[in-house]
Amino acid sequence: MSTVNEAALTQPAFAEFLRMKVTSITPERVTAELHAREELNNRFGLMHGGAIMALADNLGGTATMANLKEGQSTTTIESKTNFFAGIPIGDVAYAECVALHRGRSTMVWQTRITRGDGRLCALVTQTQMVLERGKK
Image (cartoon, rainbow, N blue to C red; front, top):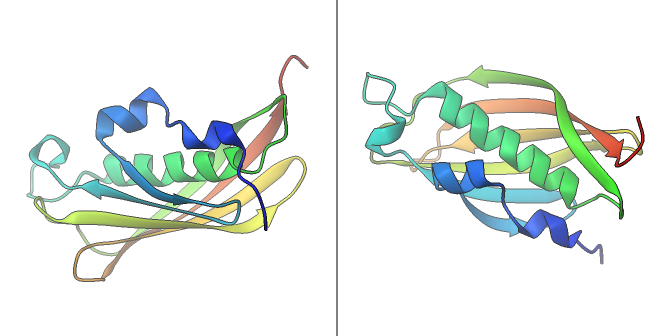
């Protein structure tokens, strides 16, 4: 059974600010929820696309962190989002991030974001670069 890098268990301040709730972390998969509340409204009664993208980006970073060795860190180098449906304010965004590639220098993750009725709202594919701390 794979073990999770302990650093993945601590979420960054931005995730706390958005009130993301990470519900599961393994080296292969991370899940989370984000309540579509008024502060995340896009003016049309739907969760802002930037909040959806931030949720996916945080999960890709968390998933990569779960796979890092001592002395490594990560940064997002590419992210692509396709939107399919809105998430109404009052609903919940459910996110599942799974590995497409876990290499030594990059990792690629795909995050599916659905809403309470199960409808697919967004699909995000992102690439994370693995960095060696202290090396330039």
